Image 1 (tube, rainbow, N blue to C red):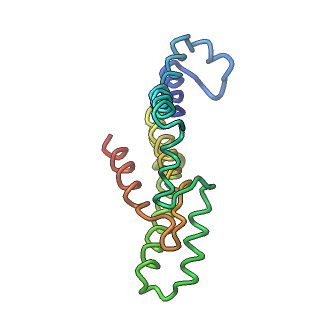
Image 2: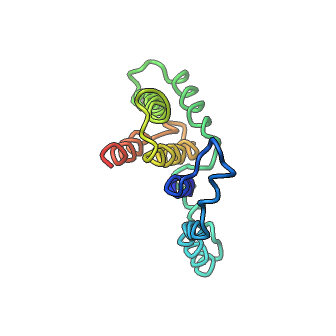
Length: 167
């Protein structure tokens, strides 16, 4: 919801320099943003009715050894595995190195898009917020299978960075 709220406030003249005065431009139609998670809530109601558990989609992640964790957990698991499985010729080590490089490069790109000479124009800041949120999702659900905790991270990054660079 954060990118939607950011975009709404930007379109209605909100300024961080004078937040109280610029809130006068905010209208009650901002409340429509609250409908954003409605689809999720309807789906959860269906799951509750059908399976007796509204969070059964979260339980299904156990089949892929994925659990909600702080974003640094996957990186720490990857570093531990690299230390255990050295030399680099091990396929799991190569995957973990690729994922670590992906994390660093993605963070550099997100920071560059938010601040500095390459930052996005103000009307595209919502893309940085959205991309950061999409990047956080796979970081917060590492695979605890003992091989590659951030497996396929680069695929997520390629999709959301490509969508934002051409959008």
